[in-house]
Length: 314
Image (cartoon, rainbow, N blue to C red; front, side):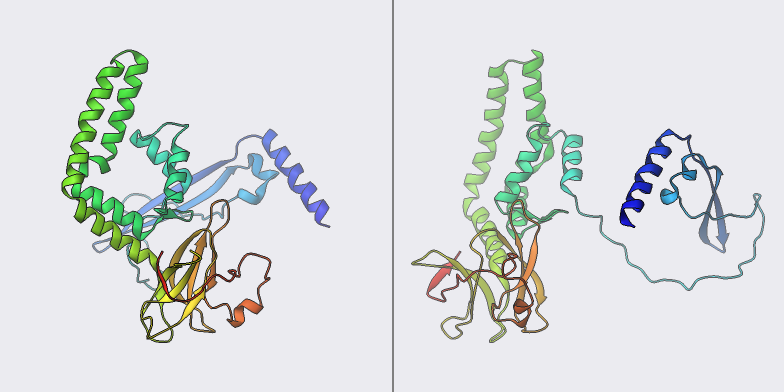
């Protein structure tokens, strides 16, 4: 029965905490075949220790033969080569991002989480692992291009060090404030002199975030629209009035395009990211057959809100 399995797991875990260390001998052999290097790894348990009570974390043993430097080995069974591509590094989770901020000297223990939360709330990032929105990318690129000093972690880290220096008595509050004011005045001057270019880049990013996919009727971009009267948002075809395709949307949360199309109705699928809730993906068409298979009370069906054009981009 399930109860016994749970009891056994707890009992084994407890006994393992009282047992001795498990010792595993790891072996590595470096081989060459022509100019190509190969590596063979093996391992075997020399002392069972806590493995005797809790074998679930035990790795499969691979016993390599005894080898000496200069030995020749015969290849008896070689797996077929696999074609692969270099993969990008994994995205940061919130925990890993906090570790990176600590490494770079950004924020404090009490402010790092709040900084990340503000990025979510402003629509610069979404999900966990964290991914940037087009708006977030546009803001970062605009700052890097027109006011590079403010986008570098060194500037923020320097400000943090200056504040620590005040606490330690190495600098006065006035000295730090004057230094910070000079730095920020320089940044503001750079941004003011490039205001139109910065605004254009950020506007383009916001516009890209408003595109939820391609209209299944005419092929034009589908954009998030806000009705002039009710101020409710919905998705409408940018080819209006020639095309009047609209879809309702939930009124809260950040919408993220997925570049996916519903296999049943052909409408775009979007992802909803709300604070405190797990992101979920849904088809824009409320009459899609997939909606009838979903529980209407589970939050996956967006409530009516699309009122069609006239409206303006949200």
